[in-house]
Image 1: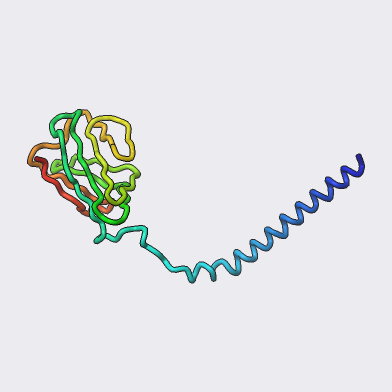
Image 2: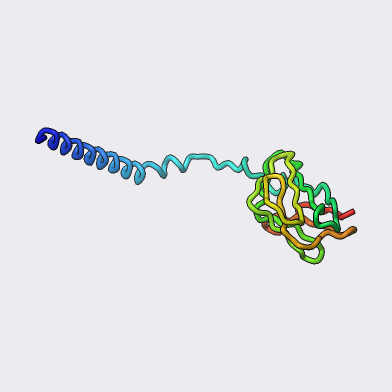
Length: 155
């Protein structure tokens, strides 16, 4: 029994010393060498399309005037994913739908339904109790900096 306590004591001391040495080495490395390593890394923006590379369109509005059928179809016609988070759809009266967290991949489409429902990756729901789109009205799609990205006239 006495020999077991001695072994446990040595194992605990060894664990403590190992952790202390490892922590000290990491602290010294972090303090002296980490800045040098990160200073030479190139900055890449290839994952984020520039303003001129964004090619998104409102490809259709269907069911205008019918709450159960009314929806807007938006498509990414560009070659890079577009983060739609914070983007808005607006009509001329200022009625606004704000997009939740969503990335639209190249060639991808999303439908924004006026009615209530459960959001999915391809179908978003505005949860309104009345229709929004009126024939002849101009609908605008704006990015999160309120820059117009697409327009569509409701048929």
